[in-house]
Amino acid sequence: MTDIKENQQLTKRQTRLINTAVEISLTPTTAKDAKFLARQFVQVTLPHRDPKTHVWYRTNGKAALGIQAGFNFRTGESYGLPYGVIPRLLLFWITTEAVRTKKSRLELGDSLAAFMRQVGLDPSRGGKRSDAKRLHEQMRRLFSATVTFCLPLDDKAGYGQEEFDIKISNHRVFWWSAKQPEQGALWKSYIDLTPEFYTAITAAPIPVHTEALKELKNSPLALDLYALCCYEAYRAEKNGKARFIPWRALMEQLGANYDRVDKNDGAKDFARNCRLALKKIKPLMPTLDFTDKNGGLTILSTSSPAISHK
Image 1 (tube, rainbow, N blue to C red):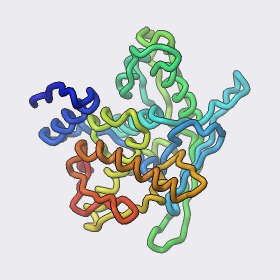
Image 2 (spheres, rainbow, N blue to C red):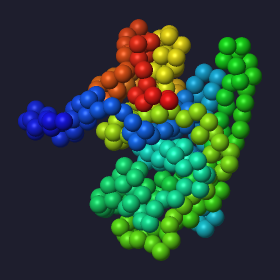
Image 3 (cartoon, rainbow, N blue to C red):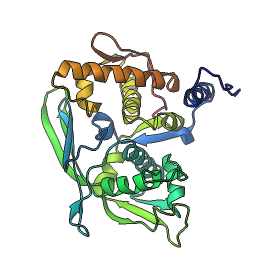
Image 4 (cartoon, rainbow, N blue to C red):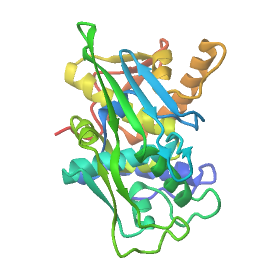
């Protein structure tokens, strides 16, 4: 592939996005290009920003996701809820490793820096808001949390509900130092997923393109919307019917922190941000056909998944 040279009118991020899009469109996808996310976290997502509460929930029609913060018994305080980009990158990594290894014990590597590179973070970035410190905090929040899934048993009939509370991990061992992420350890760090969580996330995971995640990792909305497009493109192709989602319904599903007094204004803000994210997603997912008119997002039946489910 011929790299696009630096242009004064393009930022480095825009240039990288274009180069990645060209590479995705020209290179046949293989199994190594795939990462996965559990279907439940595509249908309803985590907070974008810190909700500063101990309980969070989102709804999507008859489906809902709730999450309760874990408790730090050393300090006597709540860990807080996972939010933002990092828990999303962790969930992509967790689901992918569980699918790949077919094991509920996931090894995290010899050093924090090595794991950060696997997730897609930069171990060289220092300071109070370093990726290492942020990752360490969000891992504590995510792995200690309890997740509740509420799923309809029959969408067509309109009745029946399945609900289950799941602890993400029941055992975690970290030998790392957030202050010295490159420092190796004699033993590997690991997490044990609970059997219930392992079964839930590996039952029907959604495949996404690894390179696309790298370009979208600075925005929780872009990551959520990309995963959703991958899922809805699969459904549209399988059923031969377009998938229409009104902006307000999509805001309930993905749009954390668009809480305006006037819900219509909130939906307009959300739609505007979605359109900006879609401008980044479309070149990274050339198989995606959509329209963003008539009050919502329509994934056309001519779409196909970013990565084949086969």
